Image (cartoon, rainbow, N blue to C red; front, side):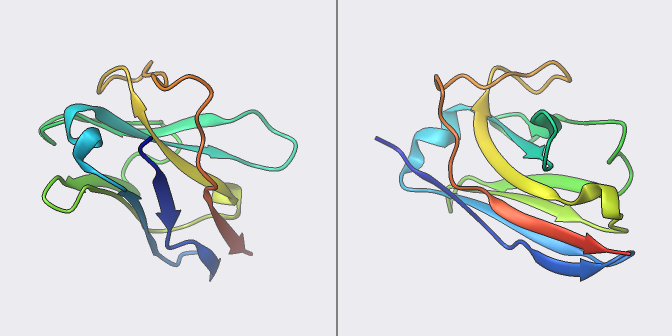
Length: 124
């Protein structure tokens, strides 16, 4: 089974930047659109960003548009999320998963799969 490992999270001040990575154990994810989701304490998991399998189409949640950039390197089986101008409300655990398409209503396509995620904490 393919495993996805998220990394790059940490503690940063408001206005700071982080770059998250999502590394796959094999090339399976190169066939999928990939999405980033996040879950803050006491809240539902929410969509953040999505990228098509080829990388030519992207969509973002309104809350991160203009601040976050999703990208991928299929030669490295890795998805990235560059996060700039971070705000305290971006504090959450961030996850990457294969999704149904590069659209705003993308949903995960691997049943009940979520990796360990990476914690992002933005201090005010």
